[in-house]
Length: 570
Ligand code: FES
Image (cartoon, rainbow, N blue to C red; front, side, top):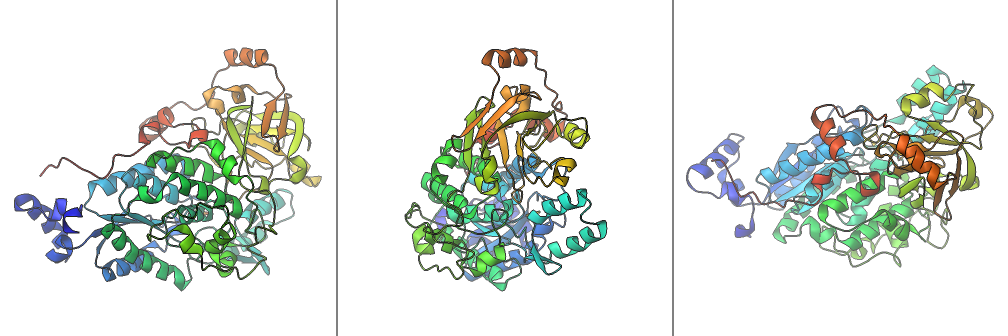
């Protein structure tokens, strides 16, 4: 193994160079043999008090370290940019690619032979996996785990209830005091959002890809099994280094197909699409928007979890976790895909059992025969848009209505409750300029709230279309990621209030009933109202971010540069 260790390029050197590399590490009390005779395992930590979902990661890192030491490696923990979904403005998605650059360069530039990625809150998973993918060392993911189920007035609550509370508050059905009480009951423990929102979806994504040990996704953060999972992952990464099992050995095209199928079965977040496309781009696997529709098709909803269903991540864990869901998909998955532990995905889930069929259904009796992501095409989204049917209303899946267009989020906020805006439950709400370039950063505002006067009438859903994203905890008949986005000047940029829009989810159609000539004339007169690039990172981002239909990565970050560093300054 000795000649294979990358860290020897630092610590195995003789003379002045080796002296410098080792001497400063020794000031931390590390004996020479730890550096020269053992695999060095980086623990990439997104702990931050500004990312509350990852606030337990220092303790989790200690558990990983115990496993690494036990297996004969030497652990070194390092921080990277942490993205807390709830606090970061204007949106954490603006910084996903920036964080991935931090991760990539931190791994490549430093003496490590393998990496453990500590991932939790939404963007901390894709940013770490993207960055690590561009280096392609042996890598394993340890997720932070979901919070315990929230409780309020005897009921179970989760992040999806925030949207319900918000509507109730706007209608005067919930007081400020009640909201504050609910706030205290929502986040009861360490961990990320307890529903099948984006963080849980990302944890399931990495497990389905084979990037984590089996069972990693669902264990609650505060369950002692989470610490055991971290410990065992620490042991496993040392074995991965010994066997030289790199990310690209796990992240095959078939693994991505598995991940799409599993995402459909769990009713995963629509954000899965932009993140999986971006990860595939880093590892050099061809994946396109149509693949999400193709591999979701025929996969029923098997996990009865909010926001598509009833239960919470804690319940999924008690019911058998993701391995039990995957076992129900046995006949569909690419079962021979190799995972981080060297076993096939099927060997990993083979012993799984379902302990509660109210939470995990069988493929013969699913909770909903339709699930996954449906990709829409038509003249309103020349490069595609997506909808999550399990979160939508059946009666709106085929709908034609008059557009009510909001030019940007400020316009929406100013006019949504304006009595002079002609809008009813048959209208189609359109929100522009919330795409990657237009906002910039593609915020989660696509499930815009309905006008208060329609809520008061008892209307709970309407067709909504935008070039933005929706929180994984959101729901409704919401068409997202319209590409090209308004700021890119496609047909979506010139749709107007009063235009007739046709949505037919079954036919995969999103059409505006305006002639090609009229659309061409409007585009000729069109002027972008998107924010102009400022300085710094946002300038870089706006000039290089790709459309949502391609994963919204920066164009120059696609692919990888490997782990080799050929020059040094000593
Ligand atoms: Fe971190 Fe929901 S806010 S996962």
